[in-house]
Image (cartoon, rainbow, N blue to C red; front, side, top):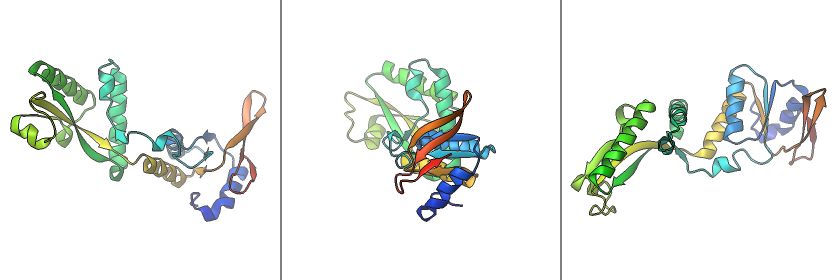
Length: 219
């Protein structure tokens, strides 16, 4: 069943109340959508509840850049660079239609600065296992002016150009939600959580209210 189909809203709410869930995810941003997808694919019974629209918060207001963690390299956070690069590869593999190549340029004022950038980006690509067409290249002189005519090459005579990826962040969230539903999960937007019920020390039920119909549901 397509639980994102608005004409099936009542059936979605019925399913939320009648089925047993191993996991209830609160929040339909990229983190919640990703958990829905991953847990559903691993055989768990999962429900996702979002108070507003999917990706209505930070997940649709990002830089749109799927970066490999270059900025963390300068901080010495090697594990973060590896993790970011690994996740970027996953997005490119699983949703290539949502990953648009984007070349980024780091200009250098002098040879020493340019060398520093080259070393950093080489290390970045090594940690991220970057290869082939994604590898960086270096420019200077007329080639640099042709690549970026607006750059003042008198002050920045050299540049290192490396590749990242852009995405439609909101579409990426929806893609994860749909994949989670296809794997057996259930997702409902406009259903803010209003409380929880306990059995002993554990949470037994999650309470929510459908903003469209005013219906209270017990998951």
